[in-house]
Image (cartoon, rainbow, N blue to C red; front, side, top):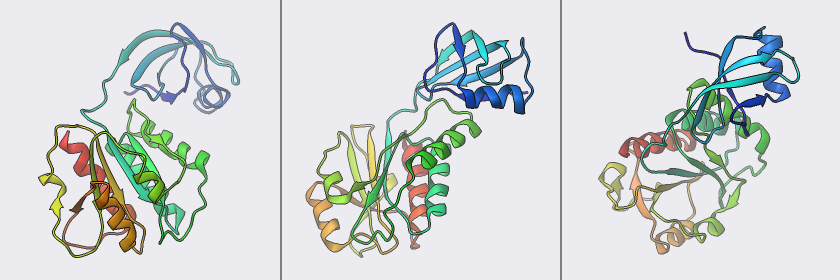
Amino acid sequence: MNLPYFYEENIQQLVHVLSEETSKHCVQVLRMKAGEELQLTDGKGSLFTATIINADKKHCGVKMEAASLKLQAAGNVSIAISLLKNPSRFEWFLEKATEIGVSEIIPLICEHTEKEHFRFDRMHNILISAMLQSRQTWLPHLHQPKKFNAFINEGFDGIKLIAHCVEEEKKTVTQITAASKNKLILIGPEGDFSATEISNALEKNFIPVTLGNTRLRTETAGVVAAALLVNMG
């Protein structure tokens, strides 16, 4: 049976006092006691097995028994995706992208983005929950929302893709090959990218790609792109 699994942003190597939230979950909710084992991750690849030495519901102390570092899957996958009018759909995307194993998520504000409000803390907690649920050790890096044109001007060391709905010659994601293992894809809002945004992205050497034969919702396109790019390795 799997040990209880928790996220702690900063973990000391030998003896560690859990955050108040994690302490409460361990001692008050799960009713764990001194001598019982649990696992921790810092979201940066480390996995710790620890034993409770002080079952305090606010300041639970644990002793590290074993530690390992899990390497991130080959290459980094970054998804830059428009915010959505319905925030629950964006939250669904965040959850699934984390489970799939993306390394970076950049919320975009595009010309056709209908809602710009972004609750960073809530979204970040969704990533943490999804990481723990899927028992991973890498937490995706979540950015604050960025304006589309400002973001594409930042530069990216890797292959750059854009998925849009305009009829033109496009490659499939699986047809893309590159020496760099870092991959970035742009996913537009409900009304797609504007013609100006597409033109600007192409000028910055983004490669137009298709994600299939049907027109996908933004959040679905994000998940499909994540799965395809992560599995490329």
